Each structure stands twice: as structure tokens, then as C-alpha cells.
Length: 46
Image (cartoon, rainbow, N blue to C red; front, side, top):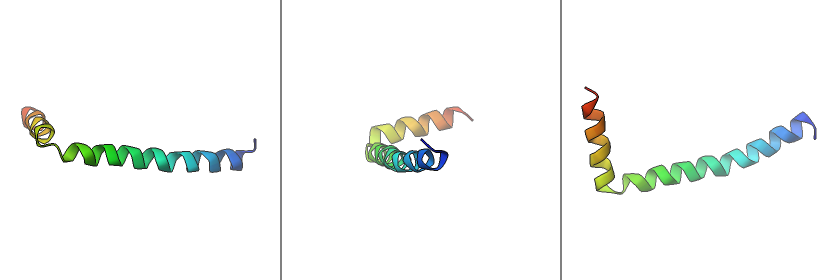
């Protein structure tokens, strides 16, 4: 496998992975309990 074809495969595999991660993060934002927990943890840092 050449370097450019490997790079193309990685690019094609990276986009669906990024999309899945973003969808998971946006799904967590719809849960109020999760957002309260994150806010408490951020506040505890200060």
C-alpha cells in the first residue's frame, strides 16, 4: 500500500469517527443531569 492510498483510507475512516464523537457529545448535552454534573466539576476546579 502506498503512502498516498494509506492517507486516503485514514481520511475516509477519520470523518465517520469524528462524526460519531460529535454526535455522542451533542447527545450528552441534551441530558440536564449530565450538564449539572459537568458544571459542578468545573466549579470545583476553582
